[in-house]
Amino acid sequence: MSIHHQADKTPTPRYKPYKGAAGGWGALISVTQAWLGSDNALKNLRMMLKTNQNGGFDCPGCAWGDSPESGMVKFCENGAKAVNWEATKRRVDAGFFARYSVSALLEQSDYWLEYQGRLTEPMAYDAETDRYKPISWDSAFALIAKHLKNLPSPNMAEFYTSGRASNEAAYLYQLFVRAYGTNNFPDCSNMCHEASGVALSQSVGVGKGTVTFEDFEHADAIFVLGQNPGTNHPRMLEPLREAVQRGAQVVCVNPLKERGLERFQHPQHPVEMLTNGDRPTNTAYFRPALGGDMALLRGMAKFLLQWERDAQLANEPSVFDHAFLNEHTEGVLEYLAAIDDTSWDGIVEQSGLTLADIEQSARMYAKGKNVIMCWAMGITQHRHSVATIQEIANLMLLRGNIGRPGAGLCPV
Image (cartoon, rainbow, N blue to C red):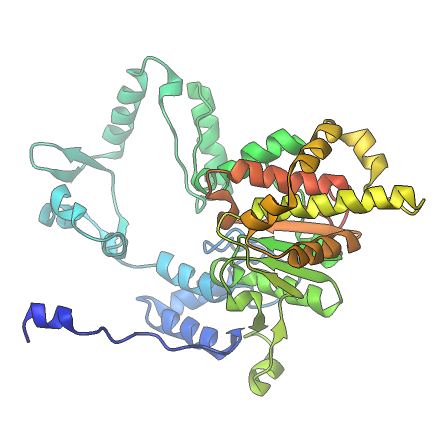
């Protein structure tokens, strides 16, 4: 069959509709395949059992926190795949670079390049041959020093590091760079959560999350915005479904229906696996328009303001935490004026949700004494990401949901 004829054929889908819960036997089978298909299965098994353990190492799969609970297996499907991928025996040596020019390597996919393995020695680019050639460690350090010394200012250098670097290595790295004279430390967290850092620094004075793992056990409501834990940090599904089971509200906001945010079958729970059972991971699921999160949040704040005014007229308990607002915030009146200036028609149109949906979300938030709001790349990777995250912070500040157990901001 000719290439042209093949291109005319309707491609056969490589996937089938899936109606089961996230996790379960599929996850277990996938972990087994990744492990047995690795090039060092016995050693990798020992590595997996050290993942997220005291005396072991943090899983390279995601940034979700380690549970304080003990257990032999403290990794998920993604974590097992990440460990088996990282713990490879494959190596990229001088012979590899003798076979491939840099131009040839540029034609390869990222997957192919990473699959070749790890570097075994320092390499320097030779423009004449368009190849990397091995150099000694002393020569490598001298080359780095030469370039750094020739810069007019230390601030013209950037020192990137990976989230997979150990804490000890990262600490020494930053000491070296600060001694050199700059604090330019872009890393993977900048690519993911630079918007969170900027927004939270301006809103609450610190560019980091304000919750611990334990706070999830005491939250009355957990909001998950622009995040797909089932794919990106599956270990988060367990605290979500535990929250649902104890009666907390778990509100998911995502334009896509993600199975992990609906139901989860825990591969480490034998009874569930044998009975093909699962548990829900949400109590409400809202699907806004792409980029409509900020309008939803503003609508929730507008409902809170309306209820606060109604409560004052009826001499009922306040909706806002006035003691918290008076002691810890400024600019409240300006924010409330901005809420008043935002029309319901604009909120509904931009959010892509009904007014009833927005009111339901606001009531779930107002009902919770201790609320956690989580978000990820679905929020940060927008042109208006900083404003959206500040809207999250403002909503949380109105009811004092920052700085107390079971409540706070959680960029993931």
